[in-house]
Image (cartoon, rainbow, N blue to C red):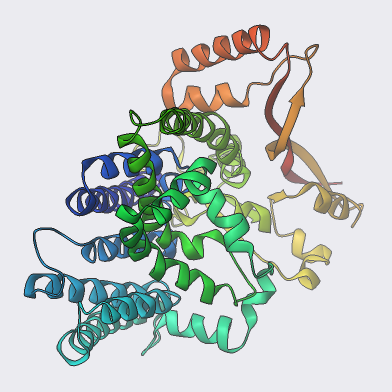
Amino acid sequence: MVDRQFLARVILGCFNAASLLSFATGLRRAFGKSTAIWYMLYQASQFHILYYASRTLSNMFAFGITTLALRCVLPEYPQALGSAVDRKRCRLSLCLLTIAGIIFRSELALLLATTTIVLFLTGRIGILRDIVPAGVLGLLLGLSTTVLIDSFFWQQFPLWPEFAAFVFNVIHGQSSAWGTHPWHFYFTNAIPRLLLNPLAYLIALPCALLQPSTRSAAAYLLIPSITFIFIYSFNPHKEWRFIVYTIPPLTAACALGASYIWTHRTKTVIHRLLSLAMVLSTLVSFFISTFVLLPASSANYPGAHALRVLHNHAHSTHPTISVHLCNLACQTGVTRFLEMPVRPAGSAPADSTLPEKLATSWRYDKTEDATLKSTQSFWAQFDYVLVEPDEEAKLRSMSDLMQWQDIDVVNGFAGLSIVRPSEAAGTVEEQVLQRFAGEETARFWSLGREFARNSFTRGWWVELKMEPKIKILKRITA
């Protein structure tokens, strides 16, 4: 089952990567090779987009489609804006945005609206000739796809999941139950985090807007996305993934400014210094993404690791094993792909060398009801539990007739810690690098870190901090 998850994520990741490359190709045709190169450097050095590109979230399913849609509205010279070919590409863009909004994310209706208004006001499309046909086609394709497929899987007809989610979260106002942020969160927190390189939005972006040669192109890239973010900021519940579709055009606007500074680096000393700062800041962004954010994020999924540990420990020890998965475990990596397939009683896998009676059938429970979980009878049905440390104390105090044995504890990311000169650095980064890049890369990183500590930082360092997140307990009878 894990192999199927890898396959699904590879397909999604490749599609999103192809959409980003297509967007870069469109930038090259619209604004030149230098802009496309700087866009690819900025995009590749960012962390969140690439890290989540293969994540099976509805936002990332929509991301590739919206990126292709926004690529279609880039001016493609020598075709004139408003020509028959240009209108066809704009209609395709609106159709793709409509489909993505209907099937995957309802908030894309706002991005569709802002993009349509900008295209209409600039004379590239007309209402009856372009907007209506594109909207109708996207509506028919999107609705027919989502209603037929989702109704079949949910066994409820007719079912339009995104409309149901829109009613629940927006009409009924239930999205606030997931947490709220101030109005300016997207502008002061999410966008800087997603763009990552501070010089990109503090220097390159203002330069693109101030220079007459790039001002109109930068405004054309920014206005639909910034307007979408501005309107969407009135929704109290905010997450960076809700505006992830705007990062390619925002990055492209930054690339316009960086390209202008780079091509004028021989003109003045200021441009030469700014060019050097742009290159160095991009290298630093690559370093932070690879050696800080990647290990931190990799260590942020203790649920998946805990379930793997439990399977390795208990599989084939009993015919049937029942396990409770706490809320944190389900939020940090436990998916259906990681669960052992259910087998009929008395059956064994074809490649098993164990007796049939030891072919374990696993039963997983994800109950969240606090009232139900406060009773002894609820916990008595499980052989193993994955619980958070604070829930463990309540569990152990319930009854003397039911005791729990510690099997293992799984640590997770808990922020950054300062390593003093007299202290040894941890091994979290080495473990991640060893997993993804091999032992030699991990050893090289360890040597480089010690060299930097001894030569530049006088022994000081910043590393990942880990703390116990999930405990694996086995039920025993007193």
